[in-house]
Image (cartoon, rainbow, N blue to C red; front, top):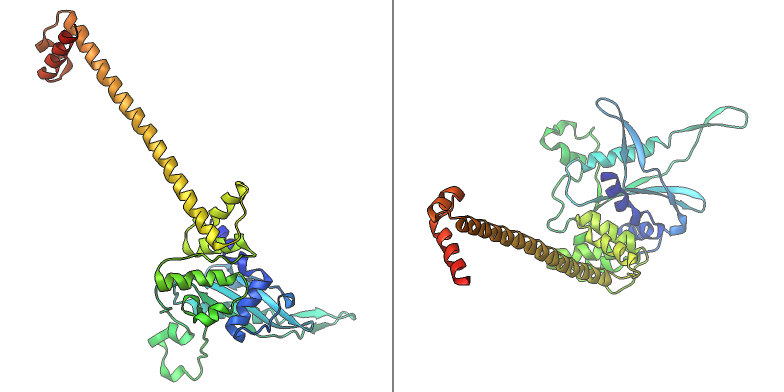
Length: 320
């Protein structure tokens, strides 16, 4: 289940147009410096030595930026919905592994081992999607270590700061500068921060399924993704967040009606059973009365109040 959730979180940002848009807005103030055709998929997994064995660590999404056929940068994106104290450790682990991978050797045509000089910077962007509060955890190695860092060691202990972007708290003009489908995700969290409610846009999306899957994963609300899936099964095409919300509302109404019908049927069955049992008891008591048993004897035999036996007897006499 976790692997499925991780995959849906990565799906939208794995598109080059979305990834380039995020980098251009957050790093280059909206200028189209990184182009989608200059991006290629990076290695999302790296290996490190744990306490007991060798373990893998996995980034959310990574891309190599190649410009003029030269690899000039590796960008990584991490999605976070809750502040985390260890984030600087995780980021330095990702970045360190990416730098370590740049130390490699190949054999030339003569069979000699030579170092490959393919060095480039590594940048990790941490996208914080929380909207109820600002990121209030560590943003650097010094923050994580805190009071345990002796001031005499600060000159030799390297600090390492994360590139943190609080999406829900970005200025409106920055949100407006997103050109890809990521703007719908950012708009959702900004609206939730400001008003606590969400009004869907009527602009058309390109990656509809991936946008709704990302929202479902980040909000733990599967209705966004399910709305698109079920609409497609019914032959309907959804292209806007406004239509997504309409579909969620329609499905909610249908579910409510279905639930009401089911409950009505269940209650009817229960009432029918109760009425059947009650009728059977009355008929049994009548058979005992007609066989000559006294009301007192029937009371003791059936363990029911005498008043009920007499009521059944009187009702039988009236009908007779």
